[in-house]
Length: 495
Ligand SMILES: [Zn+2]
Picture (tube, rainbow, N blue to C red):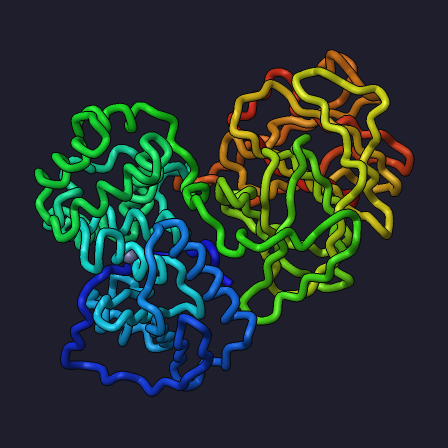
C-alpha cells in the first residue's frame, strides 16, 4: 500500500464536472464495508477483505481526530480508476498535472488512481467540521495532507518549506492561481507547506482552538477574512503567527501526520511471543508498545521472502522517514524511540515478529556501560542488526557494540536516506568497549552524506568497511564530533 506517495497529489475538492472527451470507464463493485462502497475500473484486480479493514481504520481515525460524524447509514463511494486521463477530466485538472484523485462532496464520491487514498478520504471528514460545506482551500488541503500524508516537498532536506507566501495563499483565488502555475503548483511544496502550517497551529494553540477557527471560516474564500478569524481564534495577529512559525525549526514532511489508522486497537505484539504478520492485499498492521525506557528490540524473520516494513509512531508520524525497510534475512531491529504506541505496516510478504527481552545497550554521549551486551550479527539466525533512533533532540554521540560471528567486510547501509542528520557520519572499530577517545584508539570509516548533482540526497547508501573476522568486536559510534540533529537509522551486516 502506498502510505507515503511522493508523486504529485493533484487532488482538489472540486465539483466533479465531466467535460466532453472521455466517457466513464465501466466499474465493478469490488468491496462493501460498513462505511464504504469500493468500486474499481474493469480490469483492475478484485479487492480482498484486508483492504476493507484499512478503509475502516482510516474512517475511524479521521472521524475521531476531527470530531465529526458522517450521517448514519450513508456510505462514501470510492472509485478506483486505471484511466488516468479520465481522473484528470473528472477532477477538472489539466492531464499534464498528473491527477491522482479528488473528492466530490456531492454524494461523498472519491475518484482515485490508488487502491487506498487517505488524502481524499480525509476530505470527507474535514468537509464536515462546523457543518457540511467548503472551507478556505489552503486549510482544506492542509488538513487532508496532514492526515492523509505523502505530500511532495521541494527542499533537499525534506522539511516543510516555510518560505511559501502563506499570507497570500489563505485566499482561495491566490491558492488556485499558485496551484495552477507550472512553476509553483501541485508538484511543489504547496500541500506539504499547508500541512506543516496546520500541524503547527494545532501543536501551538491546541486542536480545539484550531477546529473552532476552521468551523468559523466555513465558506470563507477571502484572505483578509481568513486572517482576521485566525487571529481572533488564537488571540494573536496573523502576521505575528506567521513570523513566529517561519522562525521555528521545520519538521520533516513525513512526520506531519498526528494520527495513524489502526492505532486505536490494543497491541498485537505482547511479550516475546512470535506473531506472524501476513500482508494480504494492501498491507497489514501490527500494533506494539515501546516501554518507558524507550528501548525495544524486535526480532524479524522473513523466512526466505523479502517483506517491506514501515514504522509509525501513533503520536508522531513516521519513524524511518522516507524509507521502508526491506527485510531480506533475519534481523534484530533495535528501536531507540520515545515510549508509547507504535505500528508496523508489512507489505509484500509475511514476516515473523517477536520482541527481544533484553534490548541491545546503547551508549549515549560517552556514558558507557562496560557490561553492555553486544548485538550479534553474521549468524544464520540473526544476520543483521538494524538500529533506528528517533528522539528529536540533538545529541553528541551514540554508540553500541556489535559482535561479528562471521568473516567478511563490515557493511553499513542507511535506512532513512542520507540527508544530513539522518545517518551517522563516521563509525569506529575499536578493540574494546567504552572507548573515550575513539579518534586515537580505533580505526574508522567515514559515512558522508551522498549528495546528487541536483542538490538532493541519495536515498539509501552503503559503505563497505574494514575486513572483520568471526569474534571481532565492532564499536559502532558516531563520535563526539558528529552531532545528529534528530537521530538516525542504519543497518549493519557482514558481507
Ligand atoms: Zn486534497
